[in-house]
Amino acid sequence: MFFRELNRGNCKTYLVGCERTRKAALIDPIKDRVDRYLAVLAYHGYRLEYAIDTHTHADHRAAAWDLRELAQARVVMHRRAPAPHVDVHVEDGDKLAVGELELKVLHTPGHTPDSMSLWAEDRVFTGDTLLVRATGRADFAGGDPGAQYDSITGKLFALPDATLVYPAHDYRGQTHTTIGDEKRANPRIAGRTRAAYVELMNNLGLPLPEKIQEALQCNQSAIDDDSVKFPSFAQLNAVRQLSARQVSERRADEDSTVLIDVREPHEYSGELGHIGGSILIPLRELAARAQELAPHKNKQIVTICRAGVRSTTAAAMLTALGFEQVSNLSGGMLDWNEQKLPVER
Ligand SMILES: [Fe+2]
Image (cartoon, rainbow, N blue to C red; front, side, top):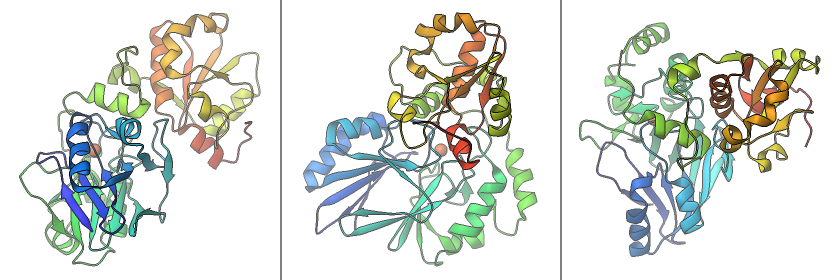
């Protein structure tokens, strides 16, 4: 396997490739470094097949969409990723072929719901699930420390002890570790019960990452211009969340409830379908088109998207624009479909 780490900083980007077919994938590329990645690929004579994000990042802007445009790479993320414009959604157990190199997908949620690890030959790329002698924080963006404990102890620690571990971040100049070493010496996990781990992670008291607002919400929505003013964390946290069942019940009363789907048109008519009667207004157009919703001002508004993340942004924006009864479909069309509720395409 051709292998390089390309950033030499706290954020890691890995280039992996098949030496025979000269096909390659970038794992967690960052937007500021696209020129460098393209230069390295050209220098070594590799064609970029995939730009893979192990999860929706909160600390840097993802380069995946630039690499699709500039190098015709296909953007790969886990099925739970909120962003539109993902070319290949993968799930646990899937295999991605990069020439003759095979990347096996392990869904390892916890840091975020869409976190995954990629296992190839003698190594595993663990994103921010498992770090060197640490673990990724699980206190925002849908983080769940219990799920993270299960992902690490149940899935990653089931790999052979000698497996090399390459994380998405390291803040102490370390490059990699092994599954065996982390099982033995990871101070957050080793010898700790699930309950003790949850307690520890819920009380780390870390400040939010710098630039989280621009990084996280741009990555979640793939909106990378300044046309959309994103709501604050406090505004997002204040959004009322409804389960798929609750929305389904409320929908029966069409006179008092209006459903706003804020995905892109290709998603509305795509694999997950849409809820009958929902009005399509993509998130990027919402502020400019909010006046279309004026006739519904006294109704219950429910916002909808793929994973429930962009629509939470939409709900906060509408609330800020003076709509008083706005709720969000939690888990989006992913949960709606999992509940086997009816969709139209
Ligand atoms: Fe992360």
